Image (cartoon, rainbow, N blue to C red; front, top):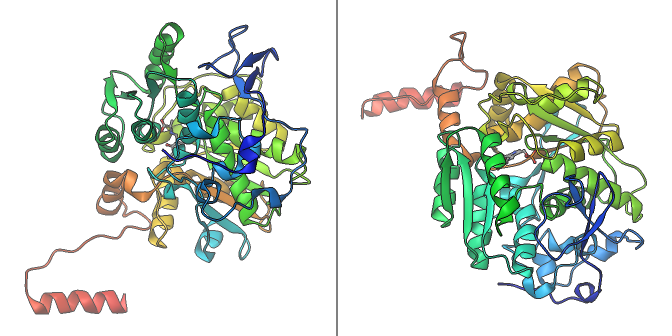
Length: 439
Ligand code: F0G
């Protein structure tokens, strides 16, 4: 296990968490996933009296802070002892620009960038949160770490728990996660429990267990998970030379990431790193959009839904981080919207086609921005960053179906690329070559 040994790691700070509902401060040296006083969601406390400049994040070559795009932002993370940190050198992911994506979104030239979180060690943004949660679990001597998951959190936990040598227990909705994610989680050695029911049922069941048994819960209700995910925002800002974009768009499921992004922006602002906040745009799948409906009611009326979408990663009907996510949207004057599966699949197919690639849920960012530009809610001249949350290899079944099958109306999909079959004859192959060259 790697450890960090730079001057910043020697700064003594207290490890505490604060309830966002009642404001009670609790010691952070134990596993907590809700406030013992009132049941509210907890935030890890960060020293916001410090003044930071981008130069604080220039790491010494060869140090772990240079290798991990999470621990590089240590001043804005909870003070977990350096020798307890469990890392797989996550983060430091690419920011891509491609004119075809800006055109598709309806944005002006050069105004759309993709932050690709599929480049993390297990192929999704979850690794950024997991390095902090598992490091915390390691620091407090957790005997077992558990999560409920639609597949990416479970794969990430499997990997980080294995790195730390701590047993992992994961609950997944039976038959409802992609084969790639299931295989990954099994392979990393986690104890996989397939629960009859959906993600919401699995998380509820697990929270009942962790309320009365000594099991460390690694879902994003754990205040330390979002801390790592904050670094997606810090890294985007760093990629942009700390110039604040107009919009950061991301997919929304259990809403841990939306919660983390708002906290990151608030903290970056308070320590003096940025002079203003971008708008956060959270995009849900239309069949799993309770947060979008809540937003449309002016945050007046919330109702969980029975989730249904092809994007299994975000097939969640009752997001656990709802209150924290609402805070993020309100803080940034953000927008919550939803897109039908067809739009999500087309946006994904375009991201794939131009050579970048992502899993279906990830494309919600692009599909949502396109919708909001068309509605006039994002200006074509806005500078937009869309977060792509996982790699193309997470869900290959959906890719093959998209390209080989017609849509529900019997039409070929917008970006369908069908393989052809030929007899093993040169003439037949030449005809295919002709077609490939001349279109
Ligand atoms: N994109 C991907 C690829 C995801 O796996 C998830 C969530 C999200 C977006 C949504 O992020 O929950 O923070 O709003 N996946 C979780 C999991 C639920 O179990 O892997 P969120």
